[in-house]
Length: 158
Image (cartoon, rainbow, N blue to C red; front, side, top):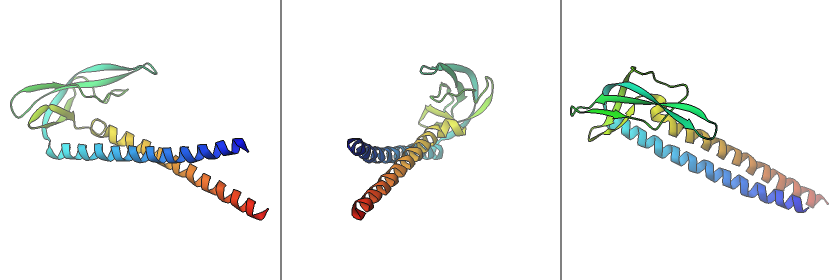
């Protein structure tokens, strides 16, 4: 009986926590997605090239990811060299590869490569995490309610 109460409490807390966490992830994904759409809409474009790949070691599993360092010339005539925060393994880019660059006109140092993962990695990651968490929380909530109905029906029939 005591373990049953603990399990019921776990279901109640876990289902609501996972749903709340999933909703928070989905809200963050929406915010980053909107921010990316606004950036793309306002951005100027330039041709650039990848000048090197920087190794970024992931400490928890010791894998090496590669972040592309790229250069481009903005409309103001200055040349900029940018290292994005997004790295991958295998690398999405090769040294010397020509790339399309999106940058803010009034702040060309805020530039991103015009590739799907460079622009949309965070919204996609948070959306996936949000869907999984909210879905798992919803399933736990349904299970909790089904379990409560069965317990109530069993108590009434006795």
